[in-house]
Image (cartoon, rainbow, N blue to C red; front, side, top):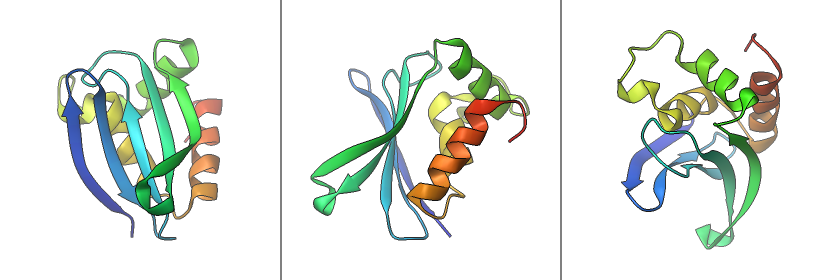
Length: 116
């Protein structure tokens, strides 16, 4: 079972959350703006004891594909709740990934259409 870390918010830098996948790989989900605003959401895998990272995927939440994906993830949550934020929605979706390869497959499925 993946382990989800705490959500960290920095008013100037946005928000992020670290997830340790079943495979032992550590990823960070970053939202450039935090809160309910658009911006860029990125997933990075931590390398070399967390001192560097490699970007796996990104999503422009202001673009049509990003808005559609966020809409699918938040359609059953209470508007204005923490679960309705982009960071919490994407973390909730990606936390069930078992490895980075599985995460990338789940991401592709989310971005490709209405069925997740």
